[in-house]
Length: 284
Length: 271
Image (cartoon, rainbow over all chains, first blue to last red; front, top):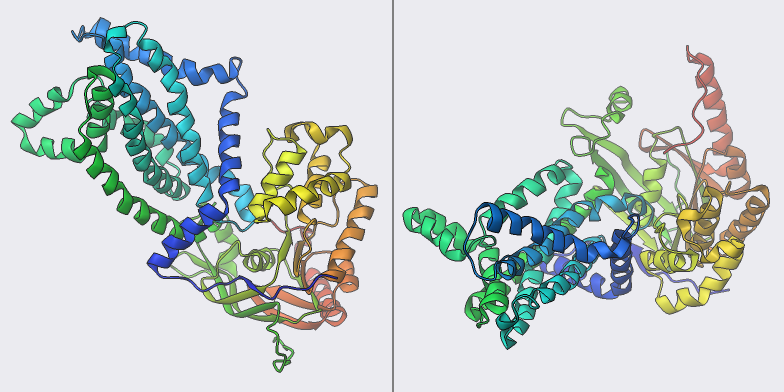
């Protein structure tokens, strides 16, 4: 016969805002293995159920790059040297972000069954989606690296700076995925809106054209500059492009501020997620 | 109304204690608008679109008790179990459950179809918050009990629903709980497995400090449980020794069926 525990397992009193955030972070550490299992499962499930399986991890970004190459270089005839690298340094990271948001819309909603049956910290679900999305970036590095075969003279040691820039992007992916995963529970229509919203965001970021194009608009309408400045992807794309395309140092100051700014935003979304998470089981 | 035992002199806190508990659903948020029709009739539904699935529930389970929760569909039985399991948070009042909990609600929740039995066992163990090492140690016994044979290495998506349920049952009952929460799972798989699972549940019931058993099977409730509570419209309307409460409930239901103009059979299973 085992000794019985009389520890309070259900019904711990609710904590304040700091306590709530701390509790969520602690549960992520405690359930790190669950986060990891869910990550693996998400990565694996992407590869199955298709003829080419895991090849899509490479093929997907490569094809997307090709589509934009057709649009920009062949149809709009934009004269940009090493155009594929110019586009790839922004499009491939962007693919990571869109994939992360796409999986965010289903990360909580899709686990309805288990949420009804087992009490566990729901934050592990978006956390796993964030981690799984990193796979998109890692695999995109392969076609990106292959582009240097076309433009070997563009490869400089600054290409390594792609990693800190990716960290900044990762830091902003976390709150975006957590927030969207919760919102998608209450408003299913959000998954219809997301692709369009993302496309607008993409065109307002310096991805298919240099930052100067946006600044030129800003010179005529000063309010536009404000939106360019607060858009994290203005700085993230510029960072990637500096490292990969121009072969020069990214603007560390701007990236550093961006990284720091992500922290309060992330903590706030974690707090809000925890506050609305009791409603998930009721709504789903 | 409820006649609770007043054994408050005990030193150890009771395994289960609900005080003034209420669980409210906001129907504007959930898409289950169909509920509205049933809800409108019994007045639990206010103009604002809010609905009390449980209301003013005071419920105390002492160590050694096994309590059957009975009542018609939509009375709040499953909601109560979800609150006790920590899946739902109460809107008002307090819930206190002490000790390790095992919940047998629907079986096989949390399984990933692309993983095999062993991996799924570990995955569900993580969902349940069981330490990894302990879970690894339990895996052979769990797979053994589920009786999957050569399918243990195959992905769960290739399983029949019976096999899936058997694995789910084995995982869910592998813990030694202080508090056992059951929601009609005694009929799982084929006849041989039902026999085996009954044995396992009886064993767990013997060891657990407190049991809450939601069921429509009144006869097994009367044999398994020492006490019964009847829920109706989200409130406890009867509480006492299992045999007495269940007998009274049966009488009430029979009377109700007789007076009902359309004598449609009452559905056997809640959702």
